[in-house]
Image 1 (cartoon, rainbow, N blue to C red):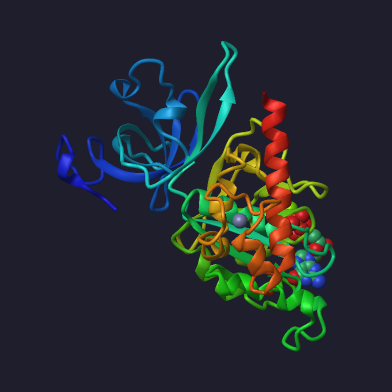
Image 2: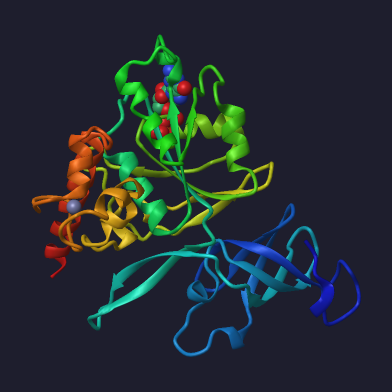
Length: 333
Ligand SMILES: Nc1nc2c(ncn2[C@@H]2O[C@H](COP(=O)(O)OP(=O)(O)O)[C@@H](O)[C@H]2O)c(=O)[nH]1
Ligand SMILES: [Mg+2]
Ligand SMILES: [Zn+2]
């Protein structure tokens, strides 16, 4: 995707060319920028780094940037980032500063979707895991996708054991659910299509088959892929940096050990109910506008649970998340 409109000097492929690419890695001194099949090593133009801003905050992973070509030698392609295009969204966490107070640390920009991966068996789905990940998707206004792997381990997939049918609830809520098996190939083309031309953050517990799935889709792709801990579904804070990996068919997979589980997403307990789209209808008739749908009287959401319109497990997942976020907030005080 060349754009010569701002180029300073002539040649279409050489020095002075202005191009557009996506930042796939950002470190203190420089960025790696993917443009078509080439990965360019780029510095950031000094004027973009006004005040205390560092390179990492000027251009983060996922940013679309315009860069000036310095060297188009395929052995060492390099350039200078001249412009960071407006971000569609950003994922950040509030990091504690030594001086006190908190500062925003942007982990990545322009995410298209959160892909929650779990297996039907071995290991069985973690309670609340998908609900949490989809809250994250709502929080950042990106699509939520659910991949149910290891379908080959279930005898009668269509026939409908209740614990399998349960996941169709998310389809009804408007999320994409992919029934998959890295073993049999089920859902692999749907998964490939879903990942194409998008920036996707994949998250799953250890053992659900993330590496195997990616290896089927693109052999040789070496990713860690965000894992959540078995016990709580919450990730640990790490400072390991985010990176994007280009897919052959276009698109990128975000590998971000810093975005595991829920830690960095900074959601207020009072806010979390707004990220359950199925609660919207019931909450209109709650007696209290500030109702957390927990112990309050005349709660429209609990009425819908009693009427069987919202599953008990879904409401329970909400309550567990609410409690977690409250405890987390207390600890931070
Ligand atoms: N039966 C079955 N096993 C699978 C499937 N996908 C992965 N596995 C197995 O599950 C185990 C964990 O897979 P792995 O990709 O390492 O999981 P990760 O920890 O999420 O990266 C391995 O023994 C895989 O062979 C699948 O679709 N069906
Ligand atoms: Mg793995
Ligand atoms: Zn309520």
